[in-house]
Length: 148
Picture (spheres, helix red, strand yellow):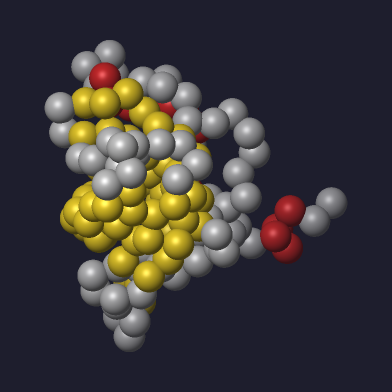
């Protein structure tokens, strides 16, 4: 669902991705790009499959500066999973820019997937939560319906 006034996509938890969808257990055997577990720890916020272009800038593993336009795979209020062409190291910092809003977010690389032909899957964590950075609003389920 889209909020027309702000162009923000709204996702309820029913529309977000589950651990099985991310780690590959919910995918067919043909999808090699998503066969690794990202994390088995509880999530601070819901994640959603959301493909969009963002600009990433940082340093490669050999310390050279880079700037590239990349694509998201999965997003959350606390970070996301990107597909980067440049080789980077875990723990390094990136600055992401949303091209629609020109908003910038500093983030830390917290996950590196295997390099693929399309690039490397890179998990990033925002230094401060930014739930609206992706243009997505993550809605929690109605907690009043869960009262015992």
